[in-house]
Length: 194
View (tube, rainbow, N blue to C red):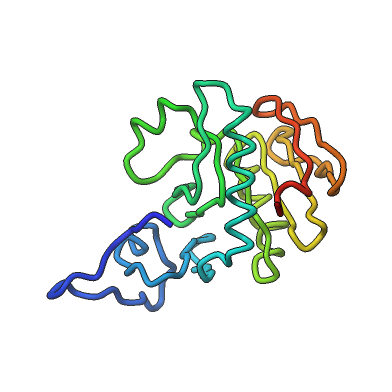
């Protein structure tokens, strides 16, 4: 996770605003306490650090994508994504242009992302399946992958159709999915747990 703020001796500690919703600027004041803080319409979403199995799936997705990516694209993990003043997410994996990595300082904008990937867990499944799919589509992110490790694993691929994603294509473990966006890559979801 990218550190947004560190606790420093003598520095005032963050407070939780009352009577108003959170903003991305509020998050910049939070300490790095091992939790993942995201915002949906000013509401704070808190997730613990990823488990080792979750990290393994993230790493395997990133490696598979990077191996197939054309030279002008790169994959990153835990990238900061500022959608608006009150919407902020940390996708597990993203694909961006190499040039944007050189110019973005702390947070990517939705137009920087060619692909956002979320690896599910029991505590985030509803968020990833509904909330993030709708938000990423409205933000204009062309492709969204949702990996569900507990399903074998399964890979759900959403592609932008106007301002929303069509129904996801579901790829089950044991069969190589031949994907074309944001670039050609062959991926058997079973490999993500190796």
